Amino acid sequence: MYAEPTGRRAEGGWQSGGVSTPHGRRASLDKQPHEVAAMFDGVAARYDLTNTVLSFGQDRPWRRATRAALGLRPGERVLDVGAGTGVSTEELAQSGAYAVGADLSLGMLYAGKRSRPSVPLLAGDALRLPFADGSFDAVTISFALRNVTDPDAALRELARVTRPGGRLVVCEFSTPVNPAFRTVYLSYLMRSLPAVARTVSSNPDAYVYLAESIRAWPDQAALAAKVGAAGWQKVAWRNLTGGIVALHRAVRE
Figure 1 (cartoon, rainbow, N blue to C red):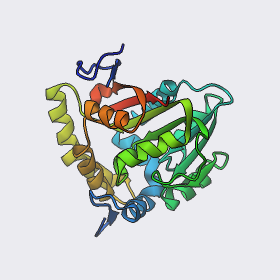
Figure 2: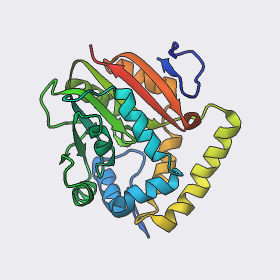
Figure 3: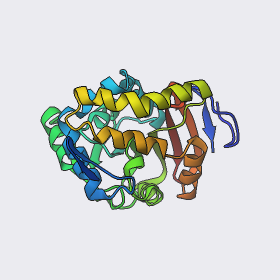
Figure 4: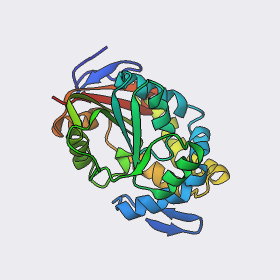
């Protein structure tokens, strides 16, 4: 189901439109690349486990939904930016497409190489991707656009490496639609999530940044406007888990 950007957000429907701490490092909200990289280096060892625990296992269906939204076909080339340990890249490869992951954090890449040695992973900055123009049939960035110091420039850079007619899917935390659910979610985000992270994460203070960055992030319609302003066409979004996460998809024309 598709609608204009001013339409109601509905579950399942697409709509147009660093600081040091005692426990490790966390980035500040100006998201300097060296701070972000150092923070993710510090959580790399238990990153995948922590994500599964903190999301109550929802990270897996979110990855499957991202793959489905891209509509990948065997033989296509897809770039996974902010791939971390490559768990999302591995999911994309199940489509039969050639999937390559890029990430700013060497610690995350090393962890991914150990756990997923067959997944192509390389170092890359979302603002300066090491690929020629039009190299990919599809590009995606999951839970990483929020960590880039200039998301608008990153969206333009993703368009640069995508061929005409290629697809984009952004999977990112967003704004729950139901007001009561949103209140409960924000309480979990700001109070319970950091406490749970202390029991499972190798750098729990990084998850204080996670909560703060999610609260400061644009909602579904505002992010759709950013995607369109970066030169993408046919921008649409779909809520997952009541709007905790939203998929934004678009086409490069």
